[in-house]
Length: 178
Image 1: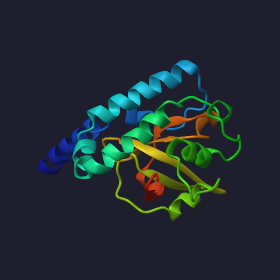
Image 2: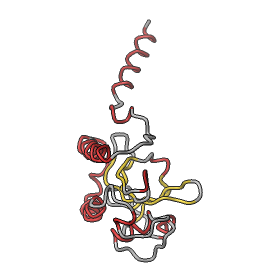
Image 3: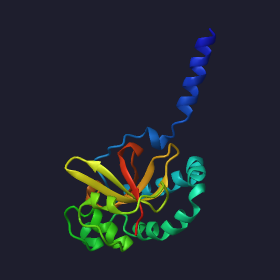
Image 4: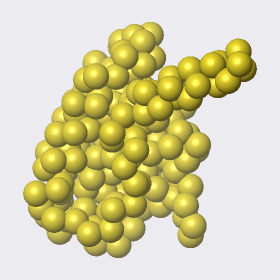
């Protein structure tokens, strides 16, 4: 009986630890303009509510203040296409970040950012991710309750600039935006 009670309490704690946003399927294939606005607001609320993000990032205060300008500039383009951003329309995640950060020493390949100085995980960091056929790159705008980075990147869902969480396991490198 004691083992059953322990299992039930554990299951209840586990069930309560998942928010409605985390329970949603990750791949929502059709997009409409009104969904993008709702997603952006939901992500910002999720960041503000995150106690993990507060404790996780408290040790990186200088990095946060340094990265806020990059995040703010990137957020201005959420929902925009490559044409609207003013960059080429193929493999443009790196071109988008170069425009937002003003960084030099990187090219159109996302993984070229890995030559930059490595830094601790923090808001404003640039993250590189592996994917079939190459890589992806974006700037960290916050963290979910579970510690996954929320990333603003170009050439994402619907070939637009998006802000969405990515699993920590996909991150190859955390680097300086400059």
